[in-house]
Length: 424
Image (cartoon, rainbow, N blue to C red; front, side, top):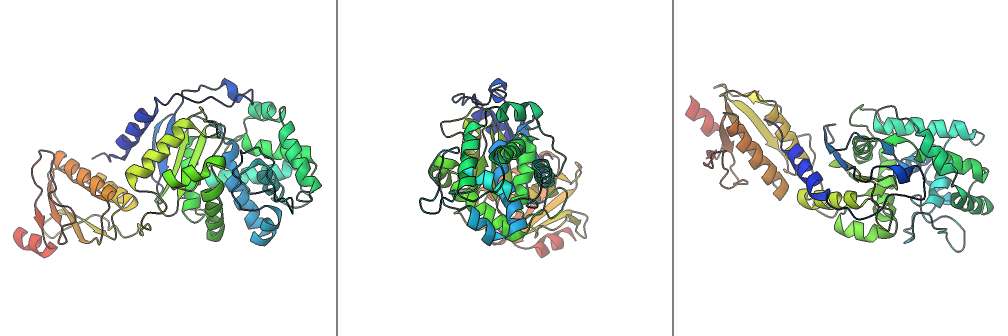
């Protein structure tokens, strides 16, 4: 069977495509020329499975979505105490390019606005590193987050750096206040170069999942940053990642996130999913219009709000095996939410399309949320559509009245021993 997650994302893509309000980032000449109708969305799971639809393979520049990852690098190299001494973690309520500082210390409000991001950029690498050396270190680490080699878009870098004067003013303020020791032009060049890195929505989903996975890339399995760094970064993303719309985002979407004026958004929900979206039309806050709508839909439909029930472990789905009578057995353990249901669907997907019986055992499932219920029911239906006789072991009646593809009830029994006795 084919997992229905692809179709769900295609539905999200189609329903959000018609949100045509907003404008591309015209203040960067090269970005003003992009096709505004592009739209891609991708999800990456903790197991490294990627679901992508639409223009999810189209490249665009990462822009401010790079900020949380460079903040993570600074934390690794300098430690929390030193980074905190250079940049605060307070929501600014200001636009991304505002001169937002503490009135007493002059410290930038947080690392997600331009002022703070320029400071964290300067905290990466040795103090005597050249702008090129520091930039290369940052890009190398960003590639590790994405799990592949990323390239700088030289045309965007040139276009954006030619219009650098506001950022140079912000960097000059930080130099004047003693928070950077690098020449403002050099600091802004390096910051602009990290922002001009080409990525795709697929890349963003992997980068987001690396943060959500405690710093381990789900594709390469490489530890990129320590777990404590991810906790710190995700905390700041939660309150500061969407600039002056962070409060609306937290209440309506509830997923730690970061946006960029290139049209990208990442959503990173610990232990559950990494989301990457791309659509160039921006709202008044500088956030992708379609990306925001898509993330709202995904959060609502999949029950992914951070204030919902804590995510369970997804390591408790047994590999498919065979019963004594030859039936395929898939045993599920733990609470059934999106990540566990997605893993169960992939177990179903591995079953050959033949006439073998399939037994799905929910004995060790203590709880099923509405997403897990919907996904499991659809998986059971599709197994029947593939020609399998399906039996559900559900002693706690977690899935009332499951139906097959012909709208007939799937047999439900109280324990696995009953099935074995009937077969023998």
